[in-house]
Amino acid sequence: MIHVGMDLHPKSSYLRAITDEGELINGRRINQNDIHKLWDYLDQFGQEEKRVVFEATSNARWMYRLLK
Image (cartoon, rainbow, N blue to C red; front, side):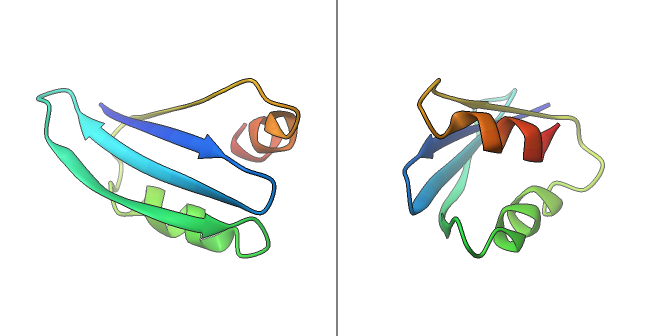
């Protein structure tokens, strides 16, 4: 499984992933108006199961809906 942490901000977010084995994967900053880069980041893991986590902030609801 790939675990992806997201640090959400109003205009951009930062993603960083880690494998179950502890291998860190390069992170990426994405702008909220360029959201296809989020899919690009997640697509690099292919069919591997992914778990995305982020803090419960005022702008978290839209990200939850987007990922769901």
